[in-house]
Length: 271
Image 1 (cartoon, rainbow, N blue to C red):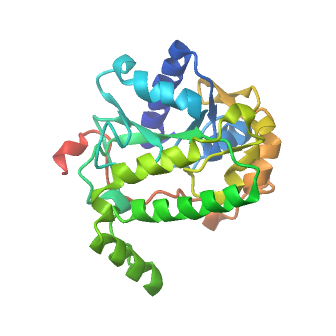
Image 2: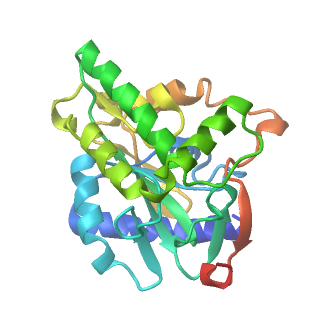
């Protein structure tokens, strides 16, 4: 493990301890579930940790976890850190610095983090699906206006980004996240055939039958025993195809783009 992964592993250890204290069921998801199933820990070139809980458990975590966390940990949400423009939470190590390029202009906690996603149900009626997807697309675009400008965007995307900024959407991300949460949380996981991780970037690949998650399966992740989706082969195949195959060398890279990383100094030194 590199130093970044060691810090993330410690955050994951704290997160699991909080879930156990509160009686919450979590799952390692995305690349972290892949790492647990394939490597027994981190994918060697990975640069993050992803976990998820049903919306019902996610709400309990957000409301109660901070008082149980060590002083160096911060549970970041749009309510605990008003400048944070995401619909999911991050658990941060405030003793460190990890400033992503897209978030470099935000005055928020920028410690090394793990991502904590809520899992929501999904409607069955076609008109409700279309409405949800349309509004979700709009709200996510509004939230993206808070991020730093990306020169790699197409001209059309840049003009849209500039227009959202001009209308001030980057200054009211908390209001936007509240609207998005209300939209997604209407569909309880207990009564929905599909569970959706709307916060991750892979779109419909994150829409899975609830039986894929089930009661979870135990796996090793470095020196931890963790929970991954019960039907993890089905889950990982849906997301990554032949997940047991080796990737070409050029694809063995992390997906976070970092402006500043400092494992030994707090982010406050760089704001």
